[in-house]
Image 1 (cartoon, one colour):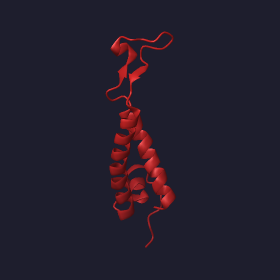
Image 2 (cartoon, helix red, strand yellow):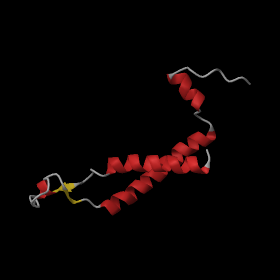
Image 3 (cartoon, rainbow, N blue to C red):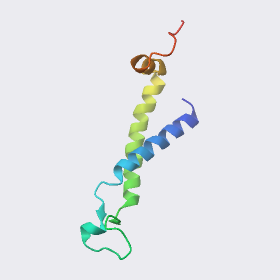
Image 4 (cartoon, one colour):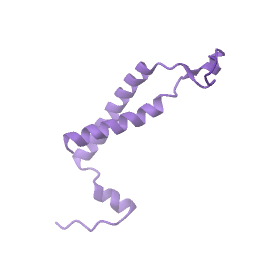
Length: 94
């Protein structure tokens, strides 16, 4: 895995994790009973985005280290995944 692949892998993991973390402990205007005219009751009142971004970064770094380590060690390869799911690649000639 090259540098660019590692960065792309981290970015994908980060955004997927961020989408999971955003709704955790989200307080909406409807929950607090203070709906601003012209907005939806489901609009966030207290979102703590900075804190959630830091949590996302920490969780993503751990997940990235595990996934990158697995890829770099060769424990699981593309041929392994193909053999389990699709069986389209030719056998490796060694």
